[in-house]
Image (cartoon, rainbow over all chains, first blue to last red; front, side):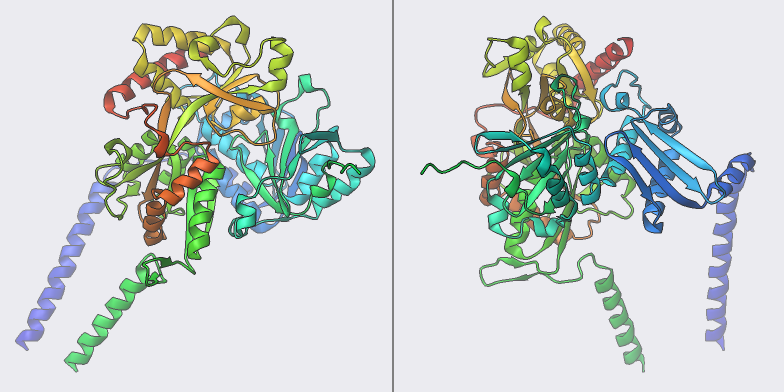
Amino acid sequence: MNRLLSIMLLIFLITMGIFAVNMYTDYYFFKEVKVINDKEEVLQKATHSIPVQAVIDHQNWGTLLIDDEARLYELTTFLSKLEQQKKAVDMLKTESDFLVCTVIYLNGTQKKYFMNEALLKDDTLFDESYPKSTVIAFYTYLLSYFYTPESIATFASKSSEITLEATELKKTLALEQKQSFIRTLQTAKELPSHQRWNDSEHSLSNEAGFVTIYQEKQPATRNSEDIIQITVFKKYYVIRYLGDPNGNAIYFAGDLTTFLPVLRKES
Amino acid sequence: MKKWTLFSLFTTITLLIVSCSNSTIPISYDKNGFPNLKGHHLVAYVATSEEVGEALLSSFCEQRGCTYEFLRLSAEEIVRRVTEERHAPKADVVIGGTLDVHIVMKSKQLSTPISIEPKDSLPKELYDSENYWFGFEIIHLAIAVNTELWQKVMKDTPIPPSLSLQDLTGERFKGKIAMSDPNFSGTAFTLFSSIAQTMKKTDAQALVKKLSENTGAVTVNGFMPIQMVGSGEYMLSINFWGSNPPGLPIKTIQLEGNALSTISGISKLKNAPNGQVVDLFIDYCLSNDARKIIRRFSEGNSFAKESVRKPIVHSALPFQQTKELIEYWNKLRLSQ
């Protein structure tokens, strides 16, 4: 009986202790009541809360629709993080044709984010709270959506010149070969990272040649944003978009060697 | 009954400890002590050149049977990302980035000590005394030149084998240089550290002023300027040696001067999901096998050749001088 009493007393003391700590923390954290006037913001967020589609319009890559739930969730999560930085959002308000990301919500409302080239190449506006890296991260994130065989083929279809280079030889892709080249890009499969270097022939082999896709014909007015550079290997190729601030490389399984110029053997 | 209760309690605790540990598959070793990492995965954030990062990961995993994935980001973005993910890290290791990045990660408690054998052969400045980071590659600043544009603009003048920072401030290069922003990029931070450490304050400011006037584009990431040179948008860029994408009309030449090299580091992230594998990976990155690979992909930047140039020393005083010089640059850019 005594033992039972002592156990009960112990439980009671522990409960009281927890209660006291709880009271103290409540007092400590909540002693001051503040009213946050965010009615308008909450209402706005509620009406915007269900995104149904996103449209990314890039001057060089064309238009991309995102309507699958997983990607939309990923995009809106990224945007909600971005929205926490007012300066970043302000920077993305200046209208531009270079890149527009439109999020369409269930109630029909739209939210647009603009990116212009000056944000990529000019930092005269620097100050300590300047969220430029956040904006660049947003841009590179959006660009990653375009790194698919279909979008790369679309980029190539808008090209004005495609040059092919191998063993000191350089030529321009003939017009009659362009469709076949685009089809090869379109039907390629992206190589997952663990498959890229899994045989020594791939990992340390020399490249077979290079392909450069230009959207702007005149070299004097070419920008990095107009160019895709492809390093061609025997069974795969590596794509680099020169307008990607991160210098990302994307690997695809496919054979582009057939388009490269070859040295003719002398008889 | 009491025994059974104690036994059940002990078993439950053991199971909980095992299930909560980071690595679910134990690492086995063959008779030569070589680890078998089949079923293990490694996630890396890469701030060095993609070729170096991927070559290190692939050569490590190929021989040991593990899989890997990586994301190449700017140094500043890696620190931001790792800070955001500190309560639930997604990556295990940060490969590359100048040592100041790794020192910042240590000070913010984002990294953790690496459990590897002492590396007595390494000079003291190449590793942290508490094993939080190791240097694995020495990288040199260089100048990338667009060969076609040079020929067009400079006519008969051939591309020299090297240029100094003073050369870059000349009238003939006005508006033709692209470089990254020292506020964000490790590449430009290294350049500013070098200037701050090797010049008097007034000379350093005068050089930065002229360099700023000749710079046509300033980018957040260190990868971008060389791509702008490759596209023909700009004639010259300051970047790390060996970072040029292949197949573009670019010639990389030496940047003359002292302390134009820095150390690229490697850190294990705190609470890394695959912590045990990271220790083995970092040990491998410091091995002779890895050095051969680094030399192959980054054009001779391994430690073996590093008696020639003195890398930038990372200590409090030069760091403060560098920050002051960057502040001066910021003021100049704002007034332009």
